[in-house]
Image 1 (spheres, rainbow, N blue to C red):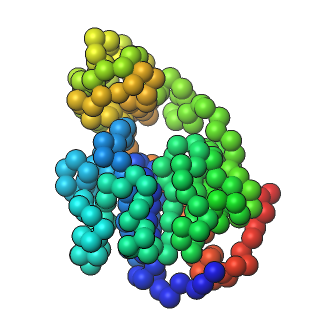
Image 2: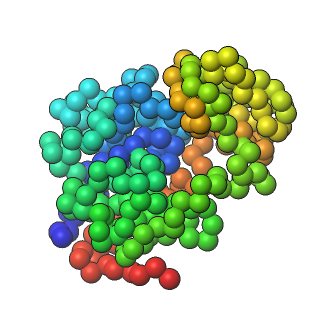
Image 3: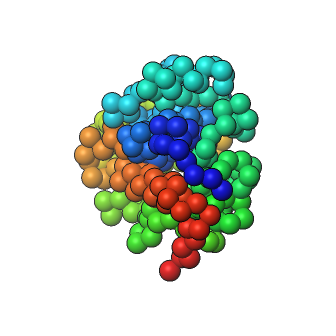
Length: 279
C-alpha cells in the first residue's frame, strides 16, 4: 500500500455511471478528484437526469453544474480531465484501467454481486453495497442499504445483504418502483419531473400499459425507445411530489459518496493500517 501524493493526482475510476455512481462522482469531483467513469454501450438508467452515463447517448451530461464528456477511448481521457470535466467511457470491463492507472477504483455497478472487481485492480479498491467483502475482493465496502448504517465504511467483511425491497421514500416502498410487465420496446407518455396521478399512463412496453401507482411526480424513467426484458426496473414515482428532487442527486447517493470520500482520505492518512471492524 502506498501514500497518495495529492488529491488532484489521485485519478479515480468509477465503474458504472448511473445515479448512485454519479452521486459518488459528484462528491469526489467537488472535493478535487479527477474522475473517470465506465458504462455499458446501452445503459438502462432510470434516474437519467442525475446520471453522468447519459453522456454515452448525448456526448455530454451536466449534473448540478458539473459536466461529463464521452471519451471515445482511454487516449481521449487525459484531455477531458485537463479541461476539468468528468470522462465517461463505454468500457464494461473497465479495461481502461491498464492504460490510465487509476489510484482508486470504485465499483458502483450495483449488480448486488461482484461482476469482476479484484483487490489487485488498484492501490485502493472500494465496493458499494452487497456482493463485496472488504479484505477479500476490495479494501473497503460502503453500506448502501437505507437506514442507520447508510454510507458507513466497512473495512472488514461485507455490507448488509440485499433485501430485495426498495427503500422507503415518502411512506412508499415497493409500489413506487415501476417494472416492465413484458419484454419489448418502451415508449414514454410523460417526462421526468411531470406530475402524475393514480392510474395515469406513464409508458407502454410493447402493447402493455404502465400506470402511476399513486399521485406524485415521475422521478425517473428509462429512455423512450429502449428495449427491456420482463421485470426490469423502468421507472420511479416519488410521492413527495417535489419536482426539484428529480433533477438533483439524492440524499442516499450523497451519503454513499461521503463514505467513499472518507475511505479514500482514511487510506491516504494511514495506508495499510486502517481496519475498522463493523459494529
